[in-house]
Image (tube, rainbow, N blue to C red; front, side):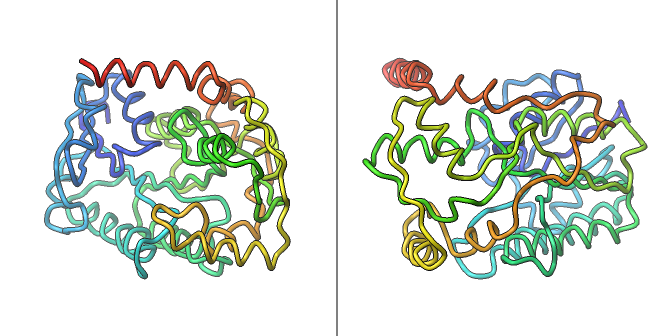
Length: 313
């Protein structure tokens, strides 16, 4: 596999930037297709990485991109729809097209990003479509590996950073599903697991839950973020009815903070039944060891100063 390139779909996104950087550090040749090359500008300077503007939903384009690849990695996914049918298009239809393209051009290795609790009969359309995509990959006849992470945290995350912003702005946090349970996993550890799987044949045909070392309720996570950021706020826990009303309202806002589908996903705890997979050979990082580096008041100020300096050049 060392002599051929790896195609990373979704490589310009949150997990993708870490995975592509780790692959480049290992001197692997990587191709990252993206709708707009500007979205992958943080990857362009990596010496073994090629960022290509392309529509991966066009089957002929996808086949051309993956031809000759040692492996294809599909990280593409969304948490919310901007219009009805996007979950099916982005999770299910793309998985089908990726499998078809790999088969057509003879690429045998496929790594697929799913989610903990993915299930065609799941409580939300997000989890259901993730489960349908898993079924397509598992029935592909390819040498596949499926990863099922809990919520992923890291400097650019849209989870802990969201609550940090809300606690800076609001005097009280009205919190839906406060007792929902999560086992957050560091983005760098997710990427590291993918990199390991590329070189380990024992991961073929396996599904791996990826979770960090500790389980938290959503209320505990929001409290922790407030403490680290220096903006701890009173939390008003909402019951099922008020949570539903809040989600119904928030899903109409641009870049929704919450949707009814998100709320439905939280009906199942995002927690691994067993420990971190030993096959990857490392212990995942604790939230408390990473989050202060980007959530603390000092870290936010440093980042803001850096942005102002960059813009003034």
